[in-house]
Amino acid sequence: MTWTAPTTNTDGSPLTDLASYRVYYGRSATCLYTPFRTVKPLTNSPPPNQTLVFRLKGLTVDELYYVAVTAVNSRGDESECTMAGSARARYP
Image (cartoon, rainbow, N blue to C red):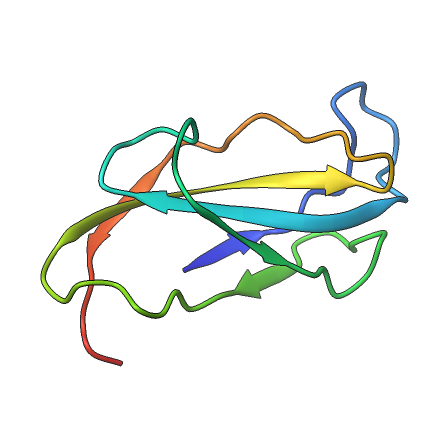
């Protein structure tokens, strides 16, 4: 999966304390009650249009999965979930 790194906080101020991303995945289109993987950012203050790539492993091939991402700052505050994307798991 790929996504564009955020550059601002929800209040519009520049993002300078990004600590991690949470990549939620599961068989329903929600971040609630689904497992997630923690992904370290390339920097705590992403530049505009920075694209990140992450590969989920250990999924059941041909099953439909939904994936969404949140950003977490150094205080542990988590953003809202992105809209979930979906795809069938496949061999790499």
